[in-house]
Length: 394
Ligand SMILES: [Zn+2]
Image 1 (cartoon, rainbow, N blue to C red):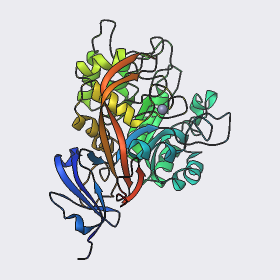
Image 2: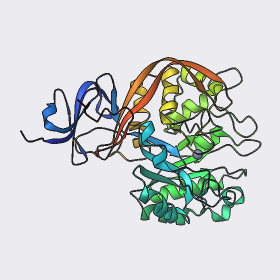
Image 3: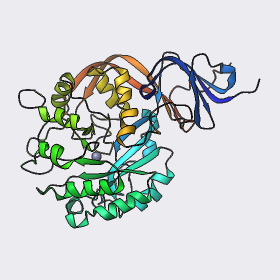
């Protein structure tokens, strides 16, 4: 009998929130695309058979907040500098198939980022363009309002519509709203969302004004669980109550992205938020050299934190696949519909005694941890922790 499929994944617990799939099913892949998700696909039909009993099979994970414009300009931070990281070194081993770099490059530096990193990565790398022309070059480069050009940013975004999915404003420490508004103007011109990393102005600017007067429905506020008392209003007040304004913002359609990072995730903000129902729409890492070896670690660790704070595994997967795909307006990603690119993650869920650190070194104990067992990108196995894609040798 001819083998119909290149890969058949047998017997895993498939979670595909977009298609409301949550059960033991098989997945068939052909020509780099999802062919079928169904019960009892005959394993004889697969050239390669992956046994996924007791494992979770999910759409390829989307981490919508990373910094991967790595390079050798040692004084340039996240922009072609030493603080960004190589995408393939961190993605597949954590179940991630799509990284979204948020603002490391701007309209002036994006072509270099594309040539140097995006075009040479197996990981799908998408980008938010910094409204500052240079991107995250640090210091005065991110403060120069003269270099924040909505028209040039929008033109660049429209030139690369398959890669550029948003506009970013970050690290601005002035008290004018013009940088926010010019990012939104660029977003309007290119019809893409804006992400704001807000929190460098002392005293802080008003979050209520940001959400209600400046951002549009669909725009993104990152680092919601950060705590910077001098420069940014916290989402949880001194009495441990989530401030009503974030629920109002969610009602308006503002999206929240975790952006854990090396400084932006505190249990004192996250735990009461989750308990009181303020849950970030997208789970993401803010991966860079300042977060990779600290409390953040990697995407599966950040997903595990939310699992241990009480989210169901289905909800964690939703917020790491279909939610971010919708936020970045890429409905082709984040699900296992037949015909879509075969980006698939397979996780085990380990039970035991674990500790999870926030950015201040405070520990939350937990009992479960997601481990990326196998990752498939465009129909190819790109990560196989325990050799489950290789038949046992006789
Ligand atoms: Zn960031």
